[in-house]
Image (cartoon, rainbow, N blue to C red; front, top):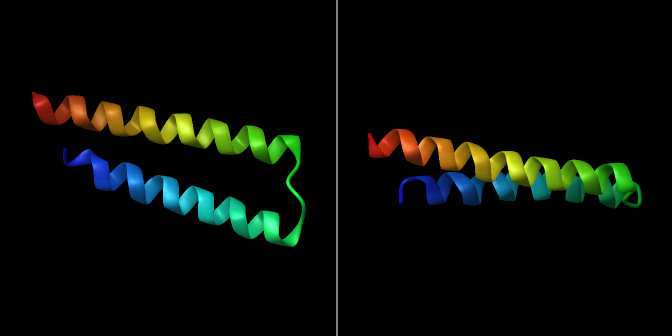
Length: 55
């Protein structure tokens, strides 16, 4: 369960960063796609981190 704070922090940072961009400029399909990619990468990285902790 050590990876849960890591997941939460990563998602918070990414969504906050995209929220700042969106505040200055309306969201584009590119930004939406990047948000989804970053979310998948964050979950994947947390999953790898968790698997390494189990060993």
